[in-house]
Image (cartoon, rainbow, N blue to C red; front, side):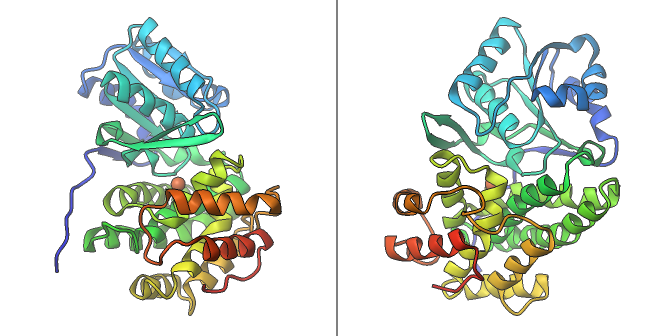
Length: 353
Ligand SMILES: [Fe+2]
């Protein structure tokens, strides 16, 4: 056995009402002047959390937009500097965390995330902004949140569609970790635990939105999924989702929902041990088929066509994916990626390529 392992350098505070511990976590990191980063909608949803900071909160940047456009991130940075803030608290999911990462990357200020949309981004070194119509990403461990707070109470207002699509993003992180380049026995443990929690918690949360135990499982799976990305890396699936988000405007959860069964089918013959783990954990006789059936069970989107993608753009997406995927178990070539995209466009049952 031979592997490298470097733990995620982040404190985790997990559990019901844990968001009310924010002030003590800010103090523990030496913060006195907090800039809150969130969406307009979140200002109301997380009012009790923001209020709990009292005078420590010196500003609220509530202009977060999907995919973290460069001008939005730079406006937030400007506000952080003008308010003379010394710590960032992002309350939200991927796009909000993206803005927080942009600020901490440029200021070295401590960064706390209160996770309301489980996606794992808080514990990954990957940062990115939408520049023009392309998502530019980079990797730096200093953007990992110093402290991440996971409170299931803040996730109960996620509707069924959002729960399904964001859950599929987390599931994809765990699944892809099983065949990513720097996979280890420890990342495998987290991936397996994440897949178990998500496949149980997502349908249960959709059936009973206020079920805190179910929400807790989705949040726990989402947390593990971020650790999986950091410990193991990503492969063709996530590169393709970034292409679909940046160039074609497809939201990240939606692209993950559609693409995952096809990306797994693409790698089915090249990563047989990963497929065996997925089959065992999900109780299915086909890894890609089992994931495809799971998307049906939770009513997640199933085709690029229904997401508004134009068939004529599949060639461009295939080329961009080939150009930007540094590692994948099966060789990434234009012909087979284009075939995979055709299957995903039509939403047919995935066929290994
Ligand atoms: Fe993702």
